[in-house]
Amino acid sequence: MRLLLAEDERDMSNVLTTILKHSGYEVDLAENGQEALDLSMKNNYDCMVMDIMMPVMDGLTALKILRSKGDVTPVILLTAKSEIDDRISGLDSGADDYLTKPFSVGELLARIRSLTRRGQDMSPSKLNVGSTSLDSEEQELSCHNSIRLSGKETKLMKLLMLNPLKGLDTKFIFDKIWSKEEDVDESVVWIYISYLRGKLLAVMSDLQIDGEEGGSFTLMPRRD
Image (cartoon, rainbow, N blue to C red; front, side):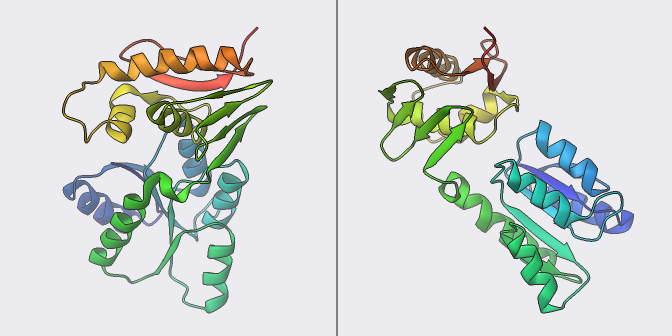
């Protein structure tokens, strides 16, 4: 799993990065809120751990911008402050959890595990990107008209719509959707990308999926 750690205190970030990597996570490090925002707009993360008090842009501002753009990645806020108003501000800004420094690293790991277990279950069942919408409960893709999707097509379309304009590599997609199945390999991703491309054309969607077999795939506005 891939995490974003946004922490400007060098000693703290070094310790947390070492422990998170030792626990099996891939970690990208940001030293301020703007850098965290830039990384989150380019990459897909399973969870973000973000300090509130950072230079250039604070964590609350970065989080508000992320949420305003529809990013539903789980976020844990870190802060040295313990006042109740700070916790309320963090949660109202869209945080999923909150830890006050100093904290137990074991507790941080437990909260990351809890949030990442929930995965896409935390996301809304109805998604809109541009003029295209997906109802994952009804397994229906719509734009100028509607079409039904299979279960796997729905999961893949949802993953793409939760991460518009982000390149999702084949391994990442496979691990998210097919990792528990023993009779398929990563080539199945390309097959289902091809299915979805046809479905997007069928509903005259304003979106397209860019990318080549075995590489990364990006949901983006259609180029006519």
